[in-house]
Length: 145
Image (cartoon, rainbow, N blue to C red; front, side, top):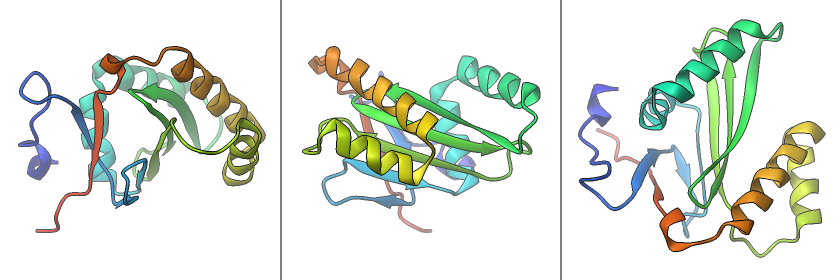
């Protein structure tokens, strides 16, 4: 994670920067399975977020957990194993040219119906609260060193 510590975050920059392995051309989607990038992103999200994740993992009987939450104009799906050594973090911009029904179908196939329902709930929340201050997140695919 040390190699990512120099990425400026607010108030030194306009937007919070989250790291991904793959990013779409128009930057409306990004994802990572690199645990160092996931750990970096979790550090940007803060201590309260990490406490919630850790408590949830302690309470689950499954091999891991999935979290769906809003982040700026993005809906984030964060999957983490119970050991926290494997994970997947995907960022989906909410301003897309796809109907809610199509979105639900896509996310039901990619994840589960429960995750798709939560995704739509977060998506609707973001759309109900669109304002320029919310546009405070950007995705970055760091250059390999």
